[in-house]
Length: 579
Image (tube, rainbow, N blue to C red; front, side):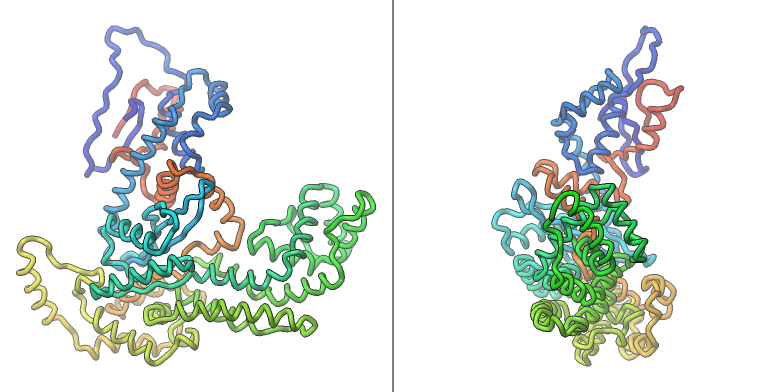
């Protein structure tokens, strides 16, 4: 460990031995203006937080800038930075593993895939659960390379390795995938493997990606028009005079107040924003275009009357879709029940057309959208997702999609509840095990069986919890579902155990903001640009820090706040400080 590192250790970890530099007989000397290791550790954290690879430490411009600030700075070579980053990754990974062993509820996982600039496919595995305080938790388990050709068998092999490494394979209740065929195949094979061990499991497609595909179906016939609008938006954003002229005309014609520069990103939020500009500022656009056409000559961004008509109709048609995506993006906890509620609303909107002047266009759009919707419902609707939906106190049976709300699903959910959650002392299959694993485990198991028999309530009493819960009206849609269960868990002690498991099932495999807004662009750039040598460690460490795990090196927590305080204190002494 670098000699000047400030560290803080949990009481349970081994104390780190630190040696001060020998100064016997030496005359007192002034403290260096910059402590080299302090700088390197702070830079390493910054590089990881910004998703920079360690080789950036050797960028000549960056090195020259550091030397300009202080000639005594000696940055770590990239090999050392890479080695230390891997050590930090291993140390923090052990902390994540240890923390998951204390979780008593079931986990749900989410899979995402991307391809880097090196044409390497990666898979991220995220783990979700609800803790005993009814707080939703999530943590990235790993970022793994998927060997070419990224088959379902290869995805399954890597996924099983991750689950085994974190020792949570028997506690996985559900997997939400990115809708790719290879991911579906891997999840199906995982389902068969878990079912052979009599463990409940389901896999579902990502609702956000499905909604994105539906919206793409709506936009695919106006790609050329969107390109024209984007050119106009880009010109306004880059020309201050044009921007002021546009603002002037919106005020003159009372066409609203607009935040400039405009969002011109290629995601759904940016595309809808461009439709919005055409729909709501026709006069400002026309006058701005006319003025600058006179100055610079004709441009290709001028829309014909027919194109404007199509944009106006499409804007009206897609406006409810936009509101739905924004609600998903801003929702504090998009439970599966709430996600299904929004998706069901979208499916109802597909065949609603308010403009007969473009009837043929919208019929084609609705046909493609409907196929995507049918594919989603056929894959996402099952007994497990039904249970997750009704256990959302805002949804219950009243707001659940009609095609999911069947008597057979309700009876299957009731049977599952009675079988796996009807007693306080749960078996090993559902994540609430108290079984002893010592050599006397058989004796303890026998004793627990006696306890279970003595404390087991009748099946009818257990089922009454679910019946009573469903008989009451749903909570207001603005209710925090987890807060509701926190306040009602004593009233439904057994059903609350099931709710903790099933409410952790994810409706989306990624944060909807990453798909629909510009937030995802920075994430995708980082995923694309990192090399193989840095991808796993950098992405995982960054995510773990964001999840609240301490930055640690060789089982020692790095206290960056104290490190900065020590480095900047005027009366600080040379040498390291540990606690």
